[in-house]
Length: 349
Image 1 (spheres, helix red, strand yellow):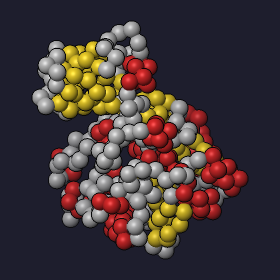
Image 2: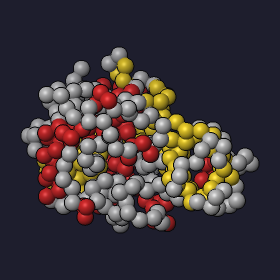
Image 3: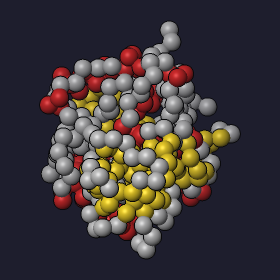
Image 4: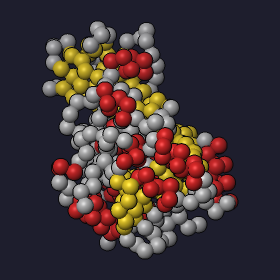
């Protein structure tokens, strides 16, 4: 049977959507979807070192979230909200915009500091923007912008979010959404993992606001996947080869890591790659680059849920989600996590 978007629907009580982070990053619950016995187990993130083995390699996304939400006004006085999707130059970006009437090419928007943004044109749902010269755009965002919390968090970003909607290992600025599986890791958890003999590696994938866009097409063949920029370096590729040689597993921390490694997978192994990806992973497409996945719980009918289902099997994943709802797990960016092992046949050469 051909899969459809509606095959990935599940019922989620709104009260399970986490609106605030926990006081401690690694205090989250962890639902383990076990490969051997095909069942799930309720654990805690702090137990992750015992669930992994010496020689395993955890791969993280080291992108850094920009404070990419800006507010301004049109010449008419109308309010405009700008959410950057991607910085494309020292003074240019593509962005989503919310206004009572969409600005046209040539329109200028005034920001809170008196500087101006010119609308250069429109590409589908996104606008091409040019900011006043004189200050690099990333510096201007740090001064004026707010953290771009996801649309399902029903409040404005505050000082807590400036720190907590950012991984502790973030170093490459460019994302407008956090790689949320990485939000659970703190210094104490890293120390425990290192003591266990687990190694760490990094890719960079600048997560775009498109990650929250709903899949509008019912048929997979009609879906246009959003584009994101990534870099898989030679050093990580060597780490992966070494882990495989010693019998270790490659464990992706987040769906963005899976997307990056699968994009870079060629001729039977992960190879260096830098550039854009529109890779769409769903059941029926084998995931060959990773052996396990740490991930948060995702939106119904989302491409991220489809990616997890491609790795672990749709029925297994949806059954685990039903259990998570019944057990009161916290969902989405500030929610709890899963440790997912693959469905039989995944990852085999």
